Length: 214
Image (tube, rainbow, N blue to C red; front, side, top):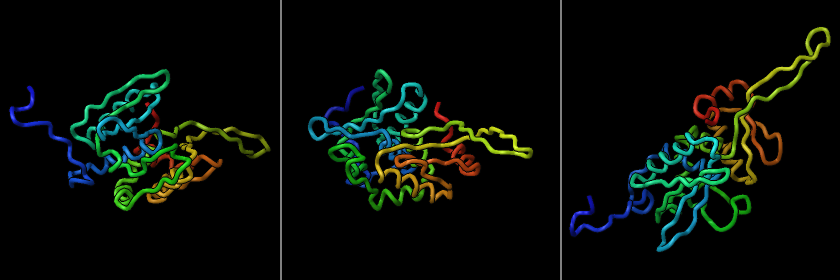
């Protein structure tokens, strides 16, 4: 059915401009995806397109991103566009820059990326969701190995699960480590652009709300 006569198009209200309700848990998850593999592109007539890229090997995660976009913008109809290696999930809205004030010209690692006060408040309430979005966008879970001597001088190999997040933005790395600190998860920095979680208790906690990609 079309719009009733005399009733024109009704724009989706903005949580920031119009006081519309915001699903904060979904927003924290989408924020993680945006910081990792998302960007906002200006379209026509003041409309913006939020694009999240996801490896085409993980279609269930692409569907999760689309569902999360619908929770943040309830009237959204996400478009999934396939590519040679990645799927782009897209939704248009005039108010994406309101919800993601980190939007700006140039690549994220070449400019300052800071959460504003209301974003920090949401992350404080839903750090697990932010961490899930970050690790599933620019991170991975894999089995690493190491060796150690045992009695008699024998060298034994052992395997352990490790989470790794890589990003060229110092600010985004800091946003992740702040959230890990909130959760009490120990992390370390094995190289300049990476954060790793290797301790058993931290891995077990991440497994509860991040887990392997699928």
